[in-house]
Image (tube, rainbow, N blue to C red; front, side):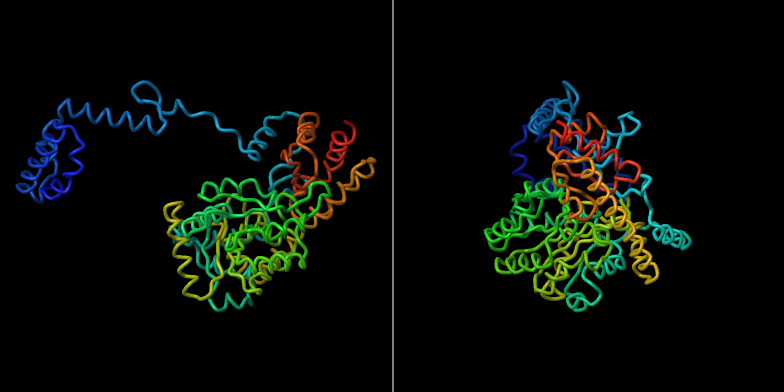
Length: 479
């Protein structure tokens, strides 16, 4: 205790004399009692400590009050510590669902949220997921914590799923990763690691998934945009995309959507991906792939991973974040993975060690149930085949709704071209409707989609597609 006090001389200089005297008296008293009662009750130390004088209390109170005010909280002595908190705006997507639920119109339609629905508009659980769950339940597994990096078998299967079982870097152990809280958690962790190791900005496509920007901003990165989509032609703006990549500072990190670009659904062709790869290599860029729809986009997991595998084969040291929400239908289980391709096995493990450093104070470790389901499916060839078939079924239903919606709009005599609906891929159709048209769609017809005109095709069914088409026609052609 004497040593602790003597080492605090500098700190004591900034405390009122009455307070200094109290702490010295308390230290001497506690030191004496501790020596006399070593090994006994510690209550004696507290009981014999001197009372804090009122002048010392005043100094502590003043410091606490000013500190509280500096933090922006109300003074606890005059009001609630939360009184300065303002109501935050609703999330643009979650808030949309909340508004939809409050709407009592019988034919209302929600095409805003990116979650698959069957043709009756109900949440869909893959039969192979049900089978895997039943087997897991019979194993009477415990509910112990997973490690910081998650379930090793899940990570192993996730990496093979996206890179391919025959990937040379995977066999050489130059690829390593961790389990994450779906794609969102992986994005945040990687953003923090980028910031920690010298990256101060990241390039994202314009437009991109709405959550990308706040995730990276909150991770400490400046978010910059590169051109991606031409709203006039409703197509990929490839020439400007390439020009913007060529203009990026050397060594920058660029976010790429692996497949089924959200929100546009417009992906580069394989030839265009090759050109992007070449330019990225020339600029020594760090490609960071967000793979949220592998297998769900086209129904073929290998086809949906083509861009990722091309970049690896071209020699890029990429990073990939994976989500298993859409393809496995495990939305609420928060299953994801984050991985890197390195020069050596040792280098890959060093990167993983830094990912773990950021995971530990963030969410400590990921949940186990969803990871067990994915592992159970991908570890069994028969179950994997069932997954592929069922994933293809989801993709085919969405493609069928794209064709039906486009035809219905054309049959109504719309003056607009809607061919982009069937050229796009994945869960969303980037309709091209303006903000005002989207608001009219909601207010007049009770159809809810995001203000950028993005329609979740998963919410379009055989029962409502004609109604949706008539409503779109009404707000776009009959204004």
